[in-house]
Amino acid sequence: MADPLVGYSFAVIAGVMAALLFYVIVSSDFKHKKAKQLYAFALILTIASWSGLEWGLWLQGEDMFRLIAYPAVPLDFFFAAWISFVLWIGEKLNERKTAIIWLAFLAAIFVIASYCMNCVQF
Image (cartoon, rainbow, N blue to C red):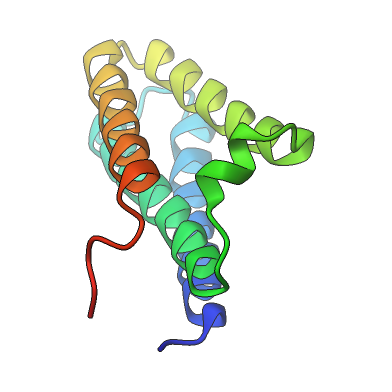
């Protein structure tokens, strides 16, 4: 079984890369030629970061989705702040469709991971 630190490392690396892409989008005043492509890659890296966090917790025997459902206020605010920030940038770029697809993908991951934590065995 892998070390949980590997999952956390993936989460940190993907999170930093997503934050840098979001910074490029915001600092270019949303007028960068490739802002929409950068937004799509930042969303992918955000999902990769959250997946790495979930994987690290799963390796430790914790269920991140159960932690979110409990009143863990700092963790809930962390995800709520990221989701709000991503939606705000999407609105500034007129990328509502991309943001809705991202939210639907997050909902699908939430349902699959909540009801099937041990479905995939290596």
